[in-house]
Length: 134
Image 1: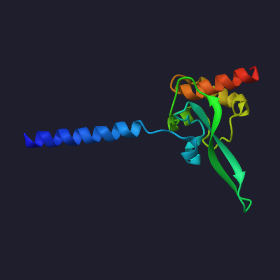
Image 2 (image 1 turned 90 degrees about the horizontal axis):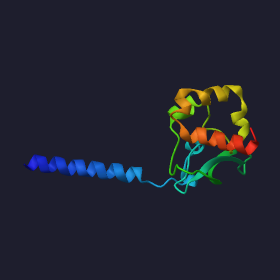
Image 3 (image 1 turned 30 degrees about the vertical axis):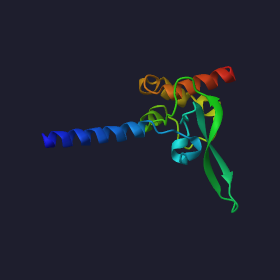
Image 4 (image 1 turned 90 degrees about the vertical axis):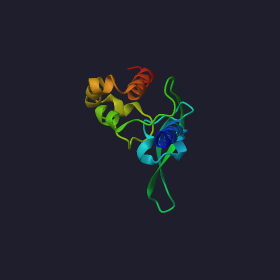
């Protein structure tokens, strides 16, 4: 009986840590550069990686919140599987349609691994293409 109670307590504690972790707020400015591109803040705005020169002339990177709002995803960091399947890079600076205009990217985007499993990247492409008139 005591071990059952102890197990229940441990299970409850583990589940509460999991729920707390999944409810963590995503703030673009708090993300490291290697997680910024293709992330979405809890506010629903896309994160964007920006570069700047520091006082010594070295290029550094900073994650910022853009004004681009996503309709259905909030507090989302894109998975490595989708980054690879869709042929994009976490080092992408800014939000630009240029990255998405190559035939190589289109082939990745239209692959089942990307198109069927990575709605964040697919939506970003279609919104950028619509804005460019493509």
